[in-house]
Length: 92
Image (cartoon, rainbow, N blue to C red):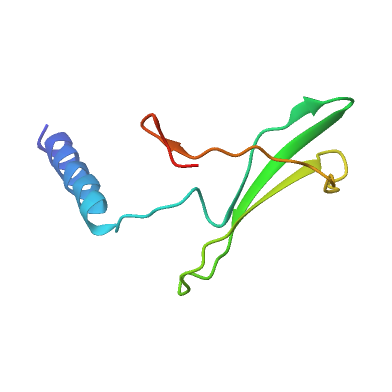
């Protein structure tokens, strides 16, 4: 019985420590993210969203690439409509 209580206590302390020791992080992933494929005409395509990995600069860039999942080839001449929203506020 004591062993179970000790394990529960130790697990709680470990979880709380992890939450307080790990710093806040911002972003969508480790530099890139690939969304699940969707049908576009006769092709299965996916959207890759990537950002620059250099954190020391003040310049932030986000790249959007649409590619065919069967061969990985980028689809050219794509127009993206992008909106940035947070809590019903549209930024652009």
